[in-house]
Length: 410
Image (cartoon, rainbow, N blue to C red):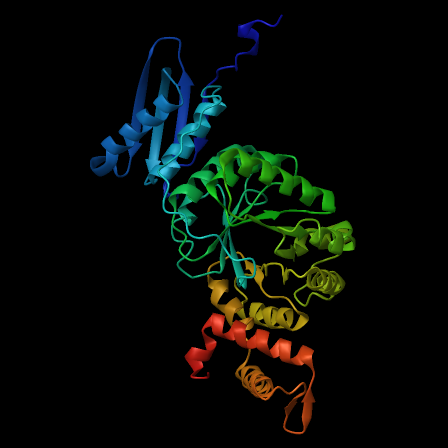
């Protein structure tokens, strides 16, 4: 029989977080387990005269909830908010081999209503999951969605710490009207991410490097299991990211793998690397993949969403890419800097000419409906039903964007 000592976690000094002159809204924690009873905390903070006692009080409460009784803890604070302090302490404690089986959850804000399946997703702003300084003001530029990223933007050694930060942010940070998204890691690591984030009601989960429908099914099944354990009855949507030749080949099978999929997007950096080609500003090398994704998404009845535009300084290039993307059938794209959001929204907005034409078609359709006519005509031209449906959708989208009211059209 294995002894209790042999299965006890190995205790060791551990640290997590950041500190220094270039750090803000974060902290660094180092914990050293000790043999003797008692907790000793050393605090250095730029706001110590104002918040030193509250930081120490929170630290003691977190350590108590994690059942830490013997340790020396050094905290270097750079203006971190309570949700970040709690997450950093918990990560350090667990790296030290303590606190197993326990969580410390910050006070929960009022959770916004679940996002609609067909809501606008013109822009989604990526936020590195291990950088709390970006969390607080992420919604100020009004992106349609905020992506708290646990994958590419997080160093492999920091995945555990980022997971706790994102979990706490979902509980404690008000992202306004933005859809609250999380990009998990590739499977199987992404399943551990789900255990922490699903109980905090993210609106949508992005699945990176999806290549087969079975991967989507595995994530969807795990989400349902977690929801069942926690009594969650609200929807959590899925957005697979296709980033390889195999993923593109399986686009329709992936798009229809779960009824919880509402959108599908593409990652062009990884896709071009998989092809062994250079990613260019014009994007001819990715045209096939993007068209195939749009077609598969439309066939599946979900939203096609384009990749990010990597050159943050080239806003005119972004504008052209966005306009071409919309012309191809995409409904939005990702962004990696807040300055890109307004440009993307402009690029994906219908033009005044398009709106005027659509309004005339809708008016003709309404008139035909009132007269019980089966044929819709505009002047001397017959209007086919698909054209009417496209016009109705464009007008609805323009109203959702506020463009009709802004321009005085109705």
